Length: 280
Image 1: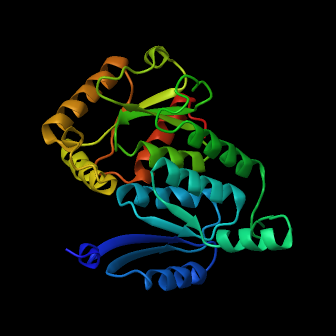
Image 2 (image 1 turned 135 degrees about the horizontal axis):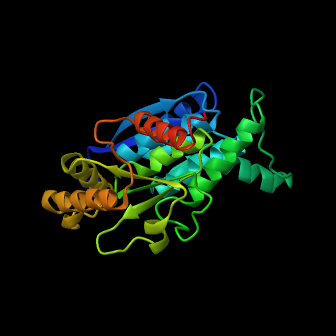
Image 3 (image 1 turned 90 degrees about the vertical axis):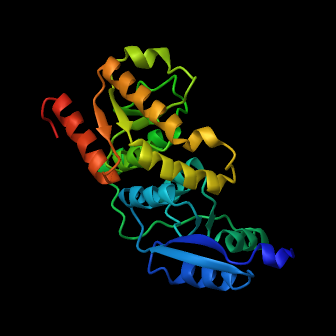
């Protein structure tokens, strides 16, 4: 079989994220893709992305169906959060103007200074959300799990239980959210089992739903041989043990199987509100 035949009918998903109308990223994507032989493309465009609270929807879709991200976000905080979210999800990305800007800066000797959009509002709430986003990105998927004392909420759950996108949404609302994965055979941090602060919530997903998501993920990773990861019987055991752990620890549990990220996050926010005695 020739190289051309091997690559025929390959379908890729292209995610275009723009701070404006999207014309730039669409033009660049279109002109780049026509250079590739035998590739079919699915496109998804987000326009006017200028705020942190717009990112959870994007990252949630990326988590559910990975692809390649081309963006034109120059706003430093939003760009950093988008790119770090892509890294956590193992999603390849490219800032549309980066190669040209780097070459021009090298040629001219001029420093690069990205400009924020004129409509940005930098008030106390904005900086609170920025700090929450930074915290969440630094404590995703068990990272720095020995130091989660600063978290407002910690989500615990099996792999692909929507922990990361839910944390991102909470962070966009100014809530410092961390998440710790349940990995078969790997014990949780001892302090987590004894913790009284912060709020700890167990996230669970029905095994049937998990099987679909994990199978798709394995294909993206080109790791179809890892049969346990998506095996229905294995998943039933994982979910069952997770529920037992949540019950044993007295953690509130949310089934995210049929809920959007926003719905799950809203339930967590309500738990935080009740815990604080009704304060907003």
